[in-house]
Length: 353
Image (cartoon, rainbow, N blue to C red):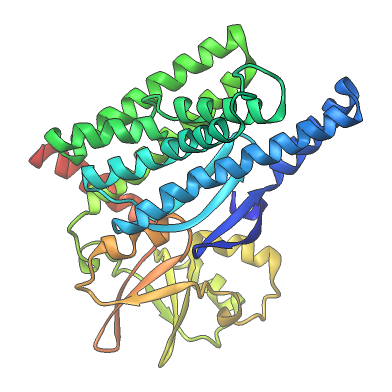
């Protein structure tokens, strides 16, 4: 999603991006409107679409600002044809905080609808085809639709927050995700009979529920653990001046999955599974320093995994070097985290739940 999004700037320090499919969607609807309604009404329709997406942006900004207030961290907001997504590196886990954050979005739409209604009363008539009436109606629909209990939509997060007050975060999340999946499947089936757009939304909600479930499993499995407890200690150290050819020969005879490029300094890593693609892309005399993955951070063995987990899950960093007294003790990377999540998650369920 990141590669196909264009940055527009920042609002309140939050980066705003627009997905390229929005431009295709906008062009398609504008041309269709001009063809079916004429130039004047077609352009008016295009302006309505832009106004709706401004309302969507305000909806997501309200979520983000409330989330930040209660300890959340927002990476960016991406505008898509079906709405907006606030990509958060950290979501408040306190039920009351999440309730406030979730309610902020729909409440923004209802406030916008109320403002439009009061300013332009009595011209605003729900169902009427003039610009203000349509924009008012859309905000009411957006606010209401987002309150449906389909996680990860706002209604699903409200459901999790309400359940979390009495049942706890783990139980509440499991129930909210299940309800979200069931609702999305129902929406897909309903859309097959009535409107394909509902099918598209249902698929989006289902994918969102799966994504939230994976993130939740990761945080649940690794919560409270330290870097030293999940780091991989079985790696091969090689100097930065070594060639790709020497690395290739070394990897054939080695069971190591990770090669750390290191001398007096840690430069990066190369994973064994990536070596075949490097052989296709780079000359054999390339140094491993030139091709290694340098996108990493350094932490101590005592650092809590939750401090950097989100950064790896969203791709902000590629791996973590665990260093103590200047000596590299271990490495943590997506594949090792996946293994840890599976094993520790099963262990925790069996022993603590």
